[in-house]
Amino acid sequence: MSKGTVKFHRVLRSTPERVYRAFLDANAMAKWLPPNGFTGKVHQMDVKLGGGWRMSFFNFTTQSEMSFGGKYLELVPNERISYTSAFDDKNLPGEMVTSITLKAVSAGVEINIVQEGIPAVIPTDQCYVGWQQSLVLLGQLVEAEINQ
Image (cartoon, rainbow, N blue to C red; front, side, top):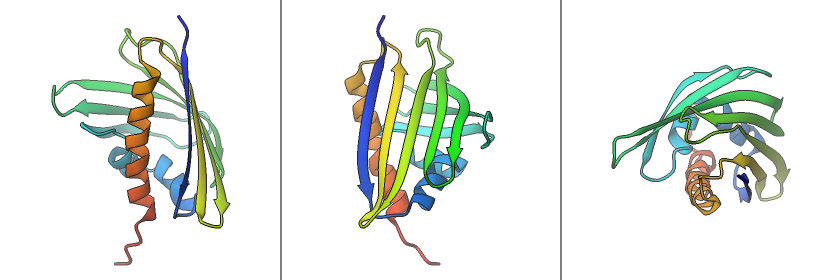
């Protein structure tokens, strides 16, 4: 079975520091990563090279849970994050690798994301839709300037 890959490019009106933090802060991840129709909960986040993370998405319609986790492969502050992830569901086998590259640009921060090794049973178009929804939420989180 072949595995899928998805790639994303965004420019947000924010900073590499804020986006980097949004990928590594448990409360932020629970807010922006679950796509529409899901809520999220971070169970573990040990942000260090080789450290592990675990999270669950809850389908609001069906009340079902999908849990997954992995390890951090690369952490270059405000520039690059790479991590593995695998689903607990045996019907979604294999390990994915997600790599995020951040770069300061005149408009804010350029973000490039590549996710490889998506299980063949997950259509890549569904991954695209889910990530696009999540990236809208990421933008809403990191572009907001609330000084209270």
